[in-house]
Length: 194
Image 1 (cartoon, rainbow, N blue to C red):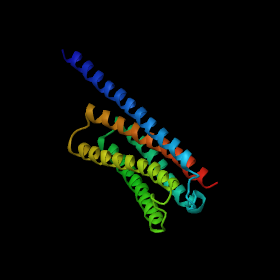
Image 2 (tube, rainbow, N blue to C red):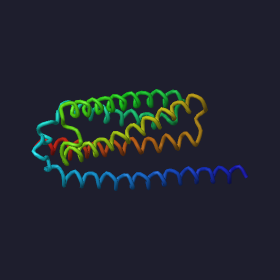
Image 3 (cartoon, rainbow, N blue to C red):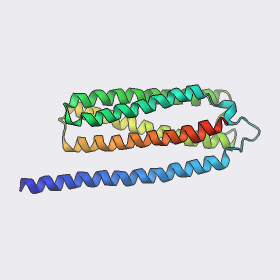
Image 4 (cartoon, helix red, strand yellow):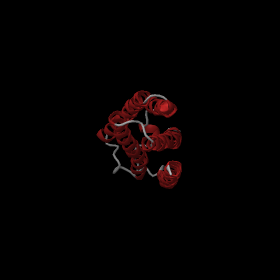
């Protein structure tokens, strides 16, 4: 009886991970649509600035390094699943701080651009820029909230199968955001600076 219950539980957790993969694929479609829209509108500057005029690549490179480093620390949290839960919490906290630094820099960039008169209402290019980068930023904020809740759950309760599944899904989500950011960095910033 206990073995049968354990098998059912593992099947349920496996289905949750599969379902999460399906969610990630739907997110891929959203970002593909945003990238396609950006590609169409990138030259519609309405006599305003282009990417070359406003992008600060060294600043964005630091943002990129923060997010990529957070991917490594998130991977370390996943590796720590076999160890004591405090190791998982430490790596998740480091990941959280790096992600928070990334979001702080993104907010600063948006604030600076809007203050300089380069807001999303200035041109179709800027509108699509703010949409692509902002959508990614909202996903990162969602990931940070999820991470914070998971850290609290790990501190309050013992490491269990549900939390392990949540950590695995969070790790998938976080790595997905890194892949999307590499696309944002390449398509929006690098190609926009040419």
